[in-house]
Length: 179
Image (tube, rainbow, N blue to C red; front, top):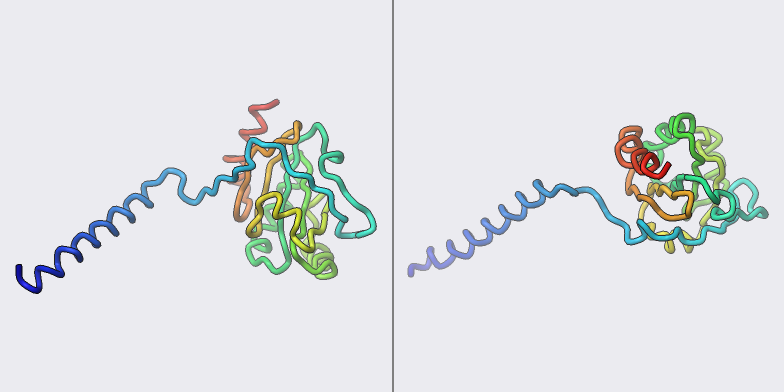
């Protein structure tokens, strides 16, 4: 075997492996979907101070008991959250369910100003300044949106911006199944 052929065989094998990987990733039906192990399980406790008045504590399980609601995790430091914000304002008008905002690892005064300037799509906003509650929910980036059913079970989770199309395709059908 010549010296040149000795390198061509491993190089050709590597190129074939890369090609198979690229084709597999492009053909994967669930690419871009990150499945949460919490989907289908009871929502973790969410008891936090409200953003507008930290002396007031909100317990999501009690407040939304027996009804569907969205939990949207956001932060003023999150560029994608700013992009998502108009869609949340639209959902507030059209979705027909409460939206709970969780301001995650943020400065409260900055978050209050952000909502004042851009509009507040949330029925309630809580502050998870240290990120402990978000950790229990499996949050690792913002924005993330959860749909919680009337029994307190996480029906689905969206990592990334919520859009009207995603609402209609991924979230709304789940609510229709359980009416």
